[in-house]
Image (cartoon, rainbow, N blue to C red; front, side):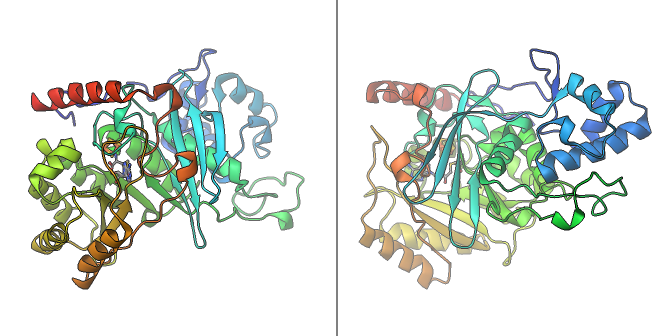
Length: 416
Ligand code: SAH
Ligand code: SF4
């Protein structure tokens, strides 16, 4: 559904685009799409379907990047595939590791756009923070990504490619033979007893990297469907969270067509403050947003909506803000939890983080009202990997440039 207004992202009409050498990248395509392009390349319908099922499994269950490794596909068939298709990954420009174990990758698309992805390990889980766009068309005042000028939607392949790369880097693909385990295929010479299932380092995905996922709805949906496909990566929808700054018209579709957990970047409880710090509020206000949350398909007490609230000193962190937050969540009957995020600074940012005492006090008010209100521990700050710090080096600008850009984006919003 097109969303009117100047703040919409530049559309990128390329679901399946051949590379310079004419070959198609299979990553990001569903099994049905793979069967279709195999059919278009000359296989009959039955063969196309079978090959698509096998190839999909090799791509997403085993993580192979060469057709030659697909041992249950006839040796003569493999060069046929390699002539026409590739199994791509985004290029890694730089990989950094924080002193707290957080890892950040600077990635590059085939057409030379840089974007970032972050992996956050902790005791019980490993969360991959995935980008949906290069930059962001929105301009939340506290977010470094929002100061990037360059924006392009990432394709499903580039979104799924982040998960594939993370698994490559973490060494998470299963090893050993699948023969006899998944298909009635001939033994490939490896011993089935050597088979080890995939590791469990990467357990969760959050669409909280660069960009506004609901301004790239179709690509994000198609990518997450591939990630959730039981024949491949098979991540449960309960382990995936999509964070939106409040693109109200797309929220119902997100619930119906993707069905993952929802996080909403609320960050303020009055129109004035939210208009200032999350400018999309001028288009879709707090009431409309909370109503869309109340209507979100799949939200329940066992699957609560997360409200993200960045703690900005003297801006949104008063006791009265906390009380108003509780009132609003109650008014809309929302099964909610509140995630308090200490503001992560970046050069030229116009805000400071609230004091630890203030954050504790704010959290207590919300918690005492019976709403879970954990304070998020900042991770990876030393490598600029924390929330809101993502911005590619090529795009770093002076304060004056940031202000000018903010004014331009604001002016565009005002006209809507
Ligand atoms: N565009 C989406 C998802 C990406 S941002 C959204 O806005 O929800 C992921 C989260 O990081 C959002 O809640 C965002 O508001 C928050 N964030 C952005 N900049 C931040 C900063 N400097 N410090 C702390 N959190 C920040
Ligand atoms: Fe975009 Fe989210 Fe940053 Fe706002 S907080 S500018 S929506 S990435």
